[in-house]
Length: 236
Length: 254
Ligand SMILES: Nc1ncnc2c1ncn2[C@@H]1O[C@H](COP(=O)(O)OP(=O)(O)O)[C@@H](O)[C@H]1O
Ligand SMILES: [Mg+2]
View: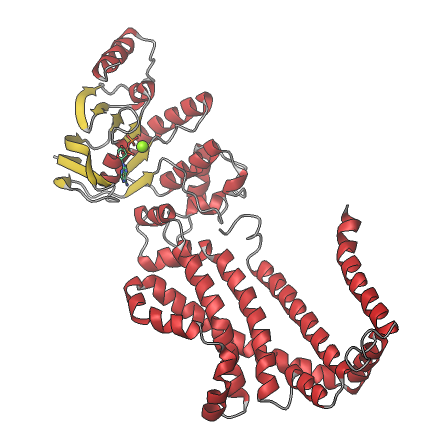
Protein backbone atom coordinates (compact mmCIF):
# COMPACT_ATOMS: atom_id res chain seq x y z
CA UNK A 1 0.00 0.00 0.00
CA UNK A 2 1.40 3.37 -1.04
CA UNK A 3 0.40 6.88 -0.29
CA UNK A 4 -0.09 8.64 2.99
CA UNK A 5 -2.18 7.34 5.86
CA UNK A 6 -3.75 9.55 8.55
CA UNK A 7 -4.91 7.69 11.64
CA UNK A 8 -7.02 9.28 14.32
CA UNK A 9 -5.42 12.67 13.77
CA UNK A 10 -6.39 15.10 16.52
CA UNK A 11 -5.42 18.69 17.07
CA UNK A 12 -6.53 21.42 19.45
CA UNK A 13 -5.39 24.98 19.87
CA UNK A 14 -5.23 26.74 23.16
CA UNK A 15 -7.03 30.05 22.91
CA UNK A 16 -7.20 32.24 25.96
CA UNK A 17 -6.61 29.35 28.34
CA UNK A 18 -9.27 27.08 26.91
CA UNK A 19 -8.60 24.15 24.63
CA UNK A 20 -10.31 24.55 21.28
CA UNK A 21 -10.55 21.23 19.43
CA UNK A 22 -10.06 21.73 15.71
CA UNK A 23 -9.63 18.19 14.39
CA UNK A 24 -11.33 15.40 16.34
CA UNK A 25 -9.91 12.24 14.87
CA UNK A 26 -9.36 12.21 11.14
CA UNK A 27 -8.84 8.90 9.36
CA UNK A 28 -7.86 9.31 5.76
CA UNK A 29 -5.87 7.59 3.07
CA UNK A 30 -4.20 9.74 0.44
CA UNK A 31 -3.64 7.60 -2.62
CA UNK A 32 -0.67 8.01 -4.91
CA UNK A 33 -1.14 9.75 -8.21
CA UNK A 34 -4.51 11.22 -7.32
CA UNK A 35 -5.99 14.51 -6.26
CA UNK A 36 -7.57 14.34 -2.85
CA UNK A 37 -9.72 17.35 -2.17
CA UNK A 38 -10.55 18.48 1.34
CA UNK A 39 -13.78 20.44 1.28
CA UNK A 40 -15.46 22.39 4.03
CA UNK A 41 -16.59 25.83 5.11
CA UNK A 42 -14.02 28.27 6.42
CA UNK A 43 -12.87 27.62 9.95
CA UNK A 44 -13.58 23.88 9.79
CA UNK A 45 -9.91 22.97 10.09
CA UNK A 46 -8.75 22.50 6.49
CA UNK A 47 -5.61 24.57 6.83
CA UNK A 48 -4.80 22.87 10.12
CA UNK A 49 -5.09 19.45 8.47
CA UNK A 50 -2.81 20.51 5.65
CA UNK A 51 -0.24 21.96 8.04
CA UNK A 52 -0.21 18.73 10.01
CA UNK A 53 0.40 16.64 6.89
CA UNK A 54 3.08 19.11 5.82
CA UNK A 55 4.82 18.80 9.17
CA UNK A 56 4.38 22.48 10.00
CA UNK A 57 2.30 21.66 13.05
CA UNK A 58 2.55 18.92 15.66
CA UNK A 59 -0.16 16.34 16.20
CA UNK A 60 -1.83 16.05 19.58
CA UNK A 61 -2.95 12.51 18.96
CA UNK A 62 -2.79 9.94 16.18
CA UNK A 63 -0.25 9.49 13.43
CA UNK A 64 0.53 10.35 9.86
CA UNK A 65 2.42 7.70 7.96
CA UNK A 66 4.16 8.18 4.64
CA UNK A 67 4.31 4.87 2.81
CA UNK A 68 6.16 6.45 -0.07
CA UNK A 69 9.16 8.78 -0.04
CA UNK A 70 8.00 12.14 -1.29
CA UNK A 71 9.47 15.37 -2.46
CA UNK A 72 6.80 17.66 -1.09
CA UNK A 73 5.82 21.21 -1.93
CA UNK A 74 3.36 23.45 -0.16
CA UNK A 75 1.24 26.25 -1.56
CA UNK A 76 0.01 28.41 1.28
CA UNK A 77 -3.30 30.17 1.48
CA UNK A 78 -1.37 33.44 1.09
CA UNK A 79 1.29 33.77 -1.59
CA UNK A 80 4.20 34.23 0.84
CA UNK A 81 6.60 35.52 -1.77
CA UNK A 82 9.90 37.11 -0.83
CA UNK A 83 9.24 40.83 -1.37
CA UNK A 84 12.89 41.49 -2.23
CA UNK A 85 12.98 38.93 -5.06
CA UNK A 86 11.47 39.34 -8.51
CA UNK A 87 9.16 36.73 -10.03
CA UNK A 88 12.01 34.74 -11.53
CA UNK A 89 14.01 34.59 -8.33
CA UNK A 90 10.92 33.79 -6.29
CA UNK A 91 10.19 30.81 -8.51
CA UNK A 92 13.83 29.81 -8.23
CA UNK A 93 13.64 30.13 -4.46
CA UNK A 94 12.42 26.57 -3.97
CA UNK A 95 15.19 25.10 -6.09
CA UNK A 96 17.70 24.81 -3.40
CA UNK A 97 20.60 23.85 -5.63
CA UNK A 98 23.11 25.26 -8.04
CA UNK A 99 22.10 23.29 -11.12
CA UNK A 100 20.97 25.14 -14.21
CA UNK A 101 17.19 25.21 -14.00
CA UNK A 102 16.54 27.98 -16.47
CA UNK A 103 14.23 25.97 -18.71
CA UNK A 104 12.41 24.62 -15.74
CA UNK A 105 11.78 27.96 -14.14
CA UNK A 106 10.61 29.42 -17.43
CA UNK A 107 8.22 26.51 -17.97
CA UNK A 108 6.68 26.94 -14.54
CA UNK A 109 6.23 30.66 -15.10
CA UNK A 110 4.62 29.98 -18.47
CA UNK A 111 2.32 27.38 -16.97
CA UNK A 112 0.82 29.90 -14.57
CA UNK A 113 0.53 32.41 -17.41
CA UNK A 114 3.04 34.94 -16.15
CA UNK A 115 5.38 34.99 -19.11
CA UNK A 116 6.75 38.51 -19.45
CA UNK A 117 6.52 39.26 -15.74
CA UNK A 118 9.79 37.57 -14.78
CA UNK A 119 11.42 40.84 -13.72
CA UNK A 120 8.43 42.17 -11.78
CA UNK A 121 8.49 42.37 -7.99
CA UNK A 122 5.61 41.00 -5.88
CA UNK A 123 4.29 44.43 -4.95
CA UNK A 124 3.92 45.20 -8.64
CA UNK A 125 1.56 42.25 -9.13
CA UNK A 126 -2.10 41.76 -8.26
CA UNK A 127 -3.05 39.35 -5.49
CA UNK A 128 -4.04 36.69 -7.99
CA UNK A 129 -0.77 37.03 -9.88
CA UNK A 130 1.19 36.74 -6.65
CA UNK A 131 -0.65 33.56 -5.85
CA UNK A 132 0.21 32.18 -9.29
CA UNK A 133 3.89 32.94 -8.68
CA UNK A 134 3.61 30.90 -5.48
CA UNK A 135 2.12 28.04 -7.50
CA UNK A 136 4.93 28.30 -10.05
CA UNK A 137 7.43 28.19 -7.19
CA UNK A 138 5.91 24.91 -6.03
CA UNK A 139 5.75 23.43 -9.55
CA UNK A 140 9.34 24.31 -10.40
CA UNK A 141 10.40 22.32 -7.36
CA UNK A 142 9.16 19.19 -9.21
CA UNK A 143 7.41 17.71 -6.23
CA UNK A 144 5.88 14.27 -6.19
CA UNK A 145 3.39 15.44 -3.58
CA UNK A 146 1.86 18.91 -3.45
CA UNK A 147 -0.23 20.36 -0.67
CA UNK A 148 -2.32 23.30 -1.78
CA UNK A 149 -4.37 25.52 0.50
CA UNK A 150 -7.15 27.22 -1.47
CA UNK A 151 -4.59 28.17 -4.11
CA UNK A 152 -7.08 29.57 -6.59
CA UNK A 153 -9.29 31.48 -4.18
CA UNK A 154 -7.75 34.84 -5.12
CA UNK A 155 -8.15 34.31 -8.87
CA UNK A 156 -10.88 35.62 -11.14
CA UNK A 157 -13.26 33.14 -12.74
CA UNK A 158 -11.42 32.84 -16.07
CA UNK A 159 -7.94 32.51 -14.65
CA UNK A 160 -9.21 30.05 -12.09
CA UNK A 161 -10.75 27.78 -14.72
CA UNK A 162 -7.57 27.89 -16.71
CA UNK A 163 -5.43 27.11 -13.69
CA UNK A 164 -7.69 24.24 -12.69
CA UNK A 165 -7.28 22.72 -16.15
CA UNK A 166 -3.51 23.24 -16.05
CA UNK A 167 -3.26 21.60 -12.66
CA UNK A 168 -5.33 18.60 -13.68
CA UNK A 169 -3.31 18.25 -16.85
CA UNK A 170 0.01 18.54 -15.06
CA UNK A 171 -1.06 16.07 -12.40
CA UNK A 172 -2.00 13.51 -15.01
CA UNK A 173 1.21 14.08 -16.94
CA UNK A 174 3.58 13.93 -14.00
CA UNK A 175 1.64 11.52 -11.84
CA UNK A 176 1.82 13.87 -8.88
CA UNK A 177 -0.13 13.25 -5.70
CA UNK A 178 -2.03 16.31 -4.58
CA UNK A 179 -3.79 17.22 -1.38
CA UNK A 180 -5.99 20.13 -2.31
CA UNK A 181 -7.98 22.27 0.10
CA UNK A 182 -10.94 24.32 -1.05
CA UNK A 183 -14.26 25.71 0.12
CA UNK A 184 -15.71 25.60 -3.38
CA UNK A 185 -17.89 22.60 -4.23
CA UNK A 186 -17.47 23.19 -7.95
CA UNK A 187 -13.71 23.24 -7.65
CA UNK A 188 -13.79 20.04 -5.63
CA UNK A 189 -15.92 18.34 -8.29
CA UNK A 190 -13.70 19.56 -11.11
CA UNK A 191 -10.43 18.45 -9.59
CA UNK A 192 -11.00 15.74 -7.04
CA UNK A 193 -10.46 12.04 -7.57
CA UNK A 194 -11.54 11.80 -4.00
CA UNK A 195 -13.45 14.46 -2.11
CA UNK A 196 -13.39 14.55 1.65
CA UNK A 197 -15.96 16.70 3.40
CA UNK A 198 -15.03 18.06 6.79
CA UNK A 199 -17.39 19.52 9.31
CA UNK A 200 -16.73 20.33 12.96
CA UNK A 201 -13.29 18.76 12.81
CA UNK A 202 -14.56 15.42 11.56
CA UNK A 203 -14.92 13.76 8.20
CA UNK A 204 -18.57 14.05 7.35
CA UNK A 205 -18.46 11.98 4.19
CA UNK A 206 -16.27 10.94 1.29
CA UNK A 207 -16.86 10.77 -2.40
CA UNK A 208 -14.81 9.09 -5.10
CA UNK A 209 -15.00 10.13 -8.71
CA UNK A 210 -13.77 7.59 -11.22
CA UNK A 211 -10.80 8.86 -13.12
CA UNK A 212 -11.67 9.70 -16.68
CA UNK A 213 -9.18 11.46 -18.89
CA UNK A 214 -11.74 13.74 -20.49
CA UNK A 215 -12.48 17.10 -19.00
CA UNK A 216 -15.33 17.13 -16.51
CA UNK A 217 -18.47 19.02 -17.25
CA UNK A 218 -20.25 20.06 -14.10
CA UNK A 219 -23.48 20.57 -16.02
CA UNK A 220 -23.78 16.87 -16.73
CA UNK A 221 -26.50 15.17 -14.71
CA UNK A 222 -24.11 12.95 -12.73
CA UNK A 223 -22.18 16.00 -11.47
CA UNK A 224 -25.34 17.92 -10.67
CA UNK A 225 -26.40 14.90 -8.68
CA UNK A 226 -23.08 14.82 -6.81
CA UNK A 227 -23.24 18.51 -6.11
CA UNK A 228 -26.66 18.09 -4.55
CA UNK A 229 -25.30 15.22 -2.50
CA UNK A 230 -22.42 17.32 -1.18
CA UNK A 231 -24.66 20.26 -0.37
CA UNK A 232 -26.85 17.88 1.50
CA UNK A 233 -23.89 16.36 3.38
CA UNK A 234 -22.58 19.74 4.39
CA UNK A 235 -25.99 20.73 5.61
CA UNK A 236 -26.92 23.53 3.27
CA UNK B 1 7.67 72.09 -7.96
CA UNK B 2 11.10 70.60 -8.42
CA UNK B 3 12.92 73.91 -8.22
CA UNK B 4 10.98 74.95 -5.15
CA UNK B 5 11.90 71.70 -3.50
CA UNK B 6 15.55 72.26 -4.31
CA UNK B 7 15.67 75.85 -3.12
CA UNK B 8 13.89 75.27 0.18
CA UNK B 9 17.02 74.11 2.07
CA UNK B 10 18.93 77.13 0.79
CA UNK B 11 16.25 79.46 2.05
CA UNK B 12 16.67 77.94 5.52
CA UNK B 13 20.44 78.34 5.38
CA UNK B 14 20.04 81.87 3.99
CA UNK B 15 17.88 82.93 6.94
CA UNK B 16 20.46 81.64 9.42
CA UNK B 17 23.20 83.55 7.57
CA UNK B 18 21.18 86.76 7.49
CA UNK B 19 20.52 86.56 11.23
CA UNK B 20 24.21 85.90 11.79
CA UNK B 21 25.24 88.92 9.68
CA UNK B 22 22.62 91.09 11.37
CA UNK B 23 23.60 90.10 14.89
CA UNK B 24 27.30 90.72 14.30
CA UNK B 25 26.75 93.93 12.33
CA UNK B 26 24.91 95.60 15.17
CA UNK B 27 27.35 94.07 17.68
CA UNK B 28 24.64 92.43 19.72
CA UNK B 29 27.34 89.97 20.64
CA UNK B 30 30.98 90.73 21.16
CA UNK B 31 33.06 89.67 18.10
CA UNK B 32 35.03 87.38 20.39
CA UNK B 33 31.87 85.55 21.36
CA UNK B 34 30.51 85.45 17.81
CA UNK B 35 32.85 86.42 14.99
CA UNK B 36 31.40 87.74 11.73
CA UNK B 37 30.73 85.32 8.86
CA UNK B 38 33.45 87.00 6.80
CA UNK B 39 35.98 86.44 9.57
CA UNK B 40 35.04 82.78 9.79
CA UNK B 41 35.23 82.42 6.02
CA UNK B 42 38.66 84.04 5.99
CA UNK B 43 39.98 81.67 8.62
CA UNK B 44 38.44 78.79 6.72
CA UNK B 45 40.36 79.66 3.56
CA UNK B 46 43.56 80.24 5.50
CA UNK B 47 43.22 76.82 7.09
CA UNK B 48 42.52 75.31 3.70
CA UNK B 49 45.56 76.95 2.22
CA UNK B 50 47.92 75.82 4.93
CA UNK B 51 46.58 72.30 4.54
CA UNK B 52 45.99 71.82 8.26
CA UNK B 53 42.24 71.48 7.75
CA UNK B 54 42.57 68.66 5.23
CA UNK B 55 44.98 66.88 7.48
CA UNK B 56 42.61 67.11 10.43
CA UNK B 57 39.64 65.98 8.33
CA UNK B 58 41.61 63.09 6.92
CA UNK B 59 42.89 61.93 10.30
CA UNK B 60 39.45 62.12 11.91
CA UNK B 61 37.82 60.41 8.96
CA UNK B 62 40.27 57.53 9.07
CA UNK B 63 39.67 57.08 12.78
CA UNK B 64 35.92 57.12 12.29
CA UNK B 65 36.06 54.58 9.48
CA UNK B 66 38.29 52.27 11.47
CA UNK B 67 36.21 52.37 14.64
CA UNK B 68 32.97 52.17 12.71
CA UNK B 69 34.09 49.14 10.71
CA UNK B 70 35.18 47.26 13.81
CA UNK B 71 31.93 48.13 15.57
CA UNK B 72 29.84 47.06 12.59
CA UNK B 73 31.59 43.72 12.24
CA UNK B 74 31.19 43.10 15.97
CA UNK B 75 27.53 44.11 15.92
CA UNK B 76 26.83 41.97 12.89
CA UNK B 77 28.61 38.90 14.22
CA UNK B 78 26.97 39.20 17.63
CA UNK B 79 23.56 39.92 16.12
CA UNK B 80 23.93 36.86 13.90
CA UNK B 81 25.01 34.71 16.82
CA UNK B 82 22.07 35.94 18.89
CA UNK B 83 19.70 35.04 16.05
CA UNK B 84 21.14 31.62 15.34
CA UNK B 85 21.50 30.71 19.03
CA UNK B 86 18.58 32.47 20.73
CA UNK B 87 19.05 30.48 23.91
CA UNK B 88 22.35 32.28 24.51
CA UNK B 89 20.70 35.66 25.04
CA UNK B 90 20.07 35.25 28.75
CA UNK B 91 23.80 34.96 29.44
CA UNK B 92 24.81 38.36 28.16
CA UNK B 93 21.76 40.56 27.82
CA UNK B 94 22.27 42.27 31.18
CA UNK B 95 25.93 42.92 30.54
CA UNK B 96 25.10 44.47 27.20
CA UNK B 97 22.26 46.45 28.74
CA UNK B 98 24.70 47.81 31.32
CA UNK B 99 27.37 48.74 28.80
CA UNK B 100 24.80 50.39 26.59
CA UNK B 101 23.96 52.80 29.38
CA UNK B 102 27.54 53.81 30.10
CA UNK B 103 28.47 56.93 28.09
CA UNK B 104 31.63 56.06 26.16
CA UNK B 105 33.23 59.39 27.04
CA UNK B 106 33.05 58.48 30.71
CA UNK B 107 35.38 55.60 29.92
CA UNK B 108 38.15 57.92 28.72
CA UNK B 109 40.07 58.10 32.02
CA UNK B 110 40.18 54.33 32.25
CA UNK B 111 40.96 53.86 28.60
CA UNK B 112 43.86 56.30 28.80
CA UNK B 113 45.22 54.28 31.69
CA UNK B 114 44.75 50.99 29.92
CA UNK B 115 45.45 51.87 26.31
CA UNK B 116 47.41 55.11 26.54
CA UNK B 117 46.63 58.24 24.58
CA UNK B 118 47.38 56.62 21.25
CA UNK B 119 45.03 55.41 18.56
CA UNK B 120 43.72 52.45 20.53
CA UNK B 121 41.84 54.59 23.01
CA UNK B 122 40.15 56.56 20.25
CA UNK B 123 39.22 53.44 18.33
CA UNK B 124 37.75 51.82 21.44
CA UNK B 125 35.67 54.90 22.17
CA UNK B 126 34.21 54.93 18.67
CA UNK B 127 33.51 51.23 18.87
CA UNK B 128 31.73 51.66 22.21
CA UNK B 129 29.67 54.55 20.89
CA UNK B 130 28.59 53.09 17.58
CA UNK B 131 28.26 49.41 18.49
CA UNK B 132 24.96 49.58 20.35
CA UNK B 133 22.80 51.45 17.87
CA UNK B 134 23.99 49.08 15.17
CA UNK B 135 23.63 45.97 17.29
CA UNK B 136 20.09 46.88 18.34
CA UNK B 137 19.04 47.70 14.79
CA UNK B 138 20.51 44.50 13.42
CA UNK B 139 18.88 42.39 16.12
CA UNK B 140 15.56 44.12 15.54
CA UNK B 141 15.87 43.42 11.82
CA UNK B 142 16.69 39.78 12.41
CA UNK B 143 14.04 39.09 15.03
CA UNK B 144 11.23 40.89 13.25
CA UNK B 145 11.49 38.57 10.25
CA UNK B 146 8.06 37.32 9.18
CA UNK B 147 7.56 33.79 10.53
CA UNK B 148 5.37 32.96 7.56
CA UNK B 149 8.29 33.51 5.21
CA UNK B 150 10.47 31.31 7.39
CA UNK B 151 7.89 28.55 6.95
CA UNK B 152 8.44 28.79 3.21
CA UNK B 153 12.07 27.96 3.94
CA UNK B 154 10.91 25.02 6.04
CA UNK B 155 8.70 23.52 3.36
CA UNK B 156 11.49 23.75 0.80
CA UNK B 157 13.88 21.98 3.13
CA UNK B 158 16.18 24.88 3.96
CA UNK B 159 18.68 24.45 6.76
CA UNK B 160 18.78 27.01 9.59
CA UNK B 161 21.81 28.59 8.00
CA UNK B 162 20.17 28.82 4.59
CA UNK B 163 17.09 30.34 6.18
CA UNK B 164 19.34 32.90 7.78
CA UNK B 165 21.18 33.91 4.62
CA UNK B 166 18.22 33.77 2.22
CA UNK B 167 15.29 34.93 4.33
CA UNK B 168 16.29 36.56 7.60
CA UNK B 169 19.23 38.56 6.27
CA UNK B 170 17.54 40.09 3.22
CA UNK B 171 14.38 40.88 5.15
CA UNK B 172 16.51 42.69 7.78
CA UNK B 173 18.35 44.80 5.23
CA UNK B 174 16.40 48.02 5.85
CA UNK B 175 17.03 47.85 9.58
CA UNK B 176 20.69 47.03 9.06
CA UNK B 177 21.18 50.03 6.77
CA UNK B 178 19.35 52.33 9.20
CA UNK B 179 21.56 51.00 11.99
CA UNK B 180 24.70 51.62 9.96
CA UNK B 181 23.73 55.21 9.27
CA UNK B 182 22.95 55.90 12.90
CA UNK B 183 26.19 54.16 13.87
CA UNK B 184 28.11 56.39 11.52
CA UNK B 185 26.61 59.47 13.15
CA UNK B 186 27.51 58.20 16.61
CA UNK B 187 31.05 57.48 15.44
CA UNK B 188 31.55 61.09 14.42
CA UNK B 189 30.24 62.40 17.71
CA UNK B 190 32.46 60.05 19.68
CA UNK B 191 35.64 60.76 17.76
CA UNK B 192 35.33 64.48 18.34
CA UNK B 193 34.94 63.89 22.06
CA UNK B 194 37.89 61.54 22.12
CA UNK B 195 40.12 63.89 20.18
CA UNK B 196 39.31 66.71 22.57
CA UNK B 197 40.73 64.73 25.43
CA UNK B 198 43.42 62.52 24.09
CA UNK B 199 44.91 63.73 20.86
CA UNK B 200 47.21 66.17 19.14
CA UNK B 201 45.57 65.82 15.74
CA UNK B 202 42.11 65.65 14.23
CA UNK B 203 39.12 67.96 14.06
CA UNK B 204 38.26 67.54 17.73
CA UNK B 205 41.72 68.54 18.79
CA UNK B 206 41.69 71.46 16.37
CA UNK B 207 38.54 72.84 18.03
CA UNK B 208 39.87 72.48 21.55
CA UNK B 209 43.22 73.97 20.60
CA UNK B 210 41.53 76.96 18.92
CA UNK B 211 39.51 77.53 22.06
CA UNK B 212 42.65 77.67 24.14
CA UNK B 213 44.08 80.17 21.66
CA UNK B 214 40.86 82.20 21.94
CA UNK B 215 40.21 81.75 18.24
CA UNK B 216 36.43 81.48 18.22
CA UNK B 217 36.44 81.85 14.43
CA UNK B 218 38.51 78.70 14.08
CA UNK B 219 36.24 76.91 16.55
CA UNK B 220 33.26 77.74 14.36
CA UNK B 221 35.14 76.60 11.24
CA UNK B 222 35.81 73.29 13.02
CA UNK B 223 32.17 72.85 13.97
CA UNK B 224 30.93 73.65 10.48
CA UNK B 225 33.43 71.28 8.91
CA UNK B 226 32.44 68.44 11.22
CA UNK B 227 28.78 68.91 10.40
CA UNK B 228 29.41 69.06 6.67
CA UNK B 229 31.79 66.11 6.64
CA UNK B 230 29.21 64.18 8.68
CA UNK B 231 26.49 64.88 6.14
CA UNK B 232 28.80 64.04 3.25
CA UNK B 233 29.84 60.71 4.73
CA UNK B 234 26.18 59.82 5.26
CA UNK B 235 25.38 60.70 1.64
CA UNK B 236 28.31 58.75 0.24
CA UNK B 237 27.36 55.89 2.49
CA UNK B 238 23.75 55.78 1.29
CA UNK B 239 24.95 56.07 -2.29
CA UNK B 240 27.34 53.13 -1.95
CA UNK B 241 24.74 50.99 -0.18
CA UNK B 242 22.17 51.73 -2.86
CA UNK B 243 24.64 50.67 -5.51
CA UNK B 244 25.36 47.46 -3.63
CA UNK B 245 21.73 46.54 -3.08
CA UNK B 246 20.25 47.90 -6.23
CA UNK B 247 16.59 48.76 -6.05
CA UNK B 248 16.26 47.60 -2.48
CA UNK B 249 14.44 50.73 -1.38
CA UNK B 250 11.73 50.58 -4.02
CA UNK B 251 11.10 46.91 -3.65
CA UNK B 252 10.82 46.95 0.07
CA UNK B 253 13.53 45.11 1.89
CA UNK B 254 11.23 45.34 4.83
N1 LIG C 1 -2.56 29.00 15.54
C1 LIG C 1 -3.83 28.95 15.96
N2 LIG C 1 -4.14 29.28 17.22
C2 LIG C 1 -5.41 29.20 17.66
N3 LIG C 1 -6.45 28.84 16.90
C3 LIG C 1 -6.22 28.52 15.64
C4 LIG C 1 -4.90 28.56 15.09
N4 LIG C 1 -4.98 28.18 13.80
C5 LIG C 1 -6.27 27.92 13.56
N5 LIG C 1 -7.03 28.11 14.66
C6 LIG C 1 -8.47 27.89 14.75
O1 LIG C 1 -8.74 26.61 14.26
C7 LIG C 1 -9.92 26.61 13.49
C8 LIG C 1 -9.65 26.05 12.11
O2 LIG C 1 -8.79 26.90 11.42
P1 LIG C 1 -8.27 26.59 9.96
O3 LIG C 1 -7.64 25.26 9.95
O4 LIG C 1 -7.44 27.72 9.54
O5 LIG C 1 -9.63 26.57 9.14
P2 LIG C 1 -9.88 26.62 7.59
O6 LIG C 1 -8.59 26.56 6.89
O7 LIG C 1 -10.76 25.45 7.30
O8 LIG C 1 -10.61 27.90 7.31
C9 LIG C 1 -10.43 28.04 13.48
O9 LIG C 1 -11.46 28.14 14.43
C10 LIG C 1 -9.25 28.84 13.88
O10 LIG C 1 -9.66 29.97 14.61
MG1 LIG D 1 -7.73 27.92 5.62
